[in-house]
Amino acid sequence: KAFAELYGTDLSAMASSDLSGDFRQIVTTALHETHDDHMHLPLTSSKAEEDAETIYRAGEGERGTHDGAIIKTLLASSPKHLQEIETIYTERHNRGLAQAIENEFSGSSARALAFHVNVSLNPWNTLADLIHDAMDGIGTNETALSAAIVRYHPYMHKIQPAYEHKNKTSLRDRVRGDTSGPYQELLLH
Image (tube, rainbow, N blue to C red; front, side):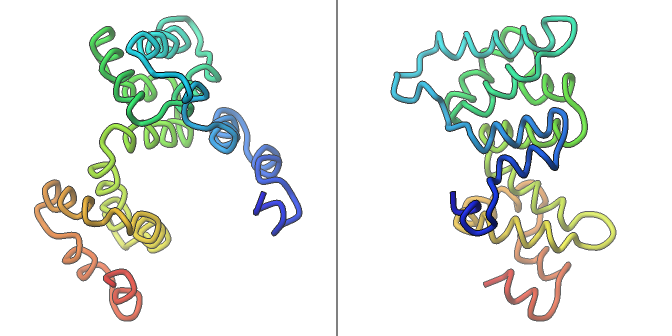
């Protein structure tokens, strides 16, 4: 609503016209979907079993992928419910949801769905990886680094230990080594 008031167009309509394929469906579903349409109902292990089976049948369990069912199920599920689905899916199919996504999707679609699942299942390590990847390699992706640090600033007290554990250096030291000047000061405060 705020986007429409500010820009005179609906964000979902704009995304629909500018994007294509599975990625368009992921973005528009994310814009419209609330976690668990059935949130008012108690989530049960039978619902998690049903959703795990829906994801399997729509993807790896059939010839051809029924992307819409996978996308809707993943994006409508709360982190707690996704954790239950992950446990059941892994027990039944010897691989987790991230591997199933990798097998069924590609490109931006695979990255978006895998990020959604991973940030739900293991948020602090996933966000530590996101920040690390922004600084990895030749040069720092300042847009990605800024976006991650600003967006996830309230959770830095949980991300920093995960980062240090995974990378054997503190996040602050890594930012100091990859940035300078006012930009560095902004990120570190």
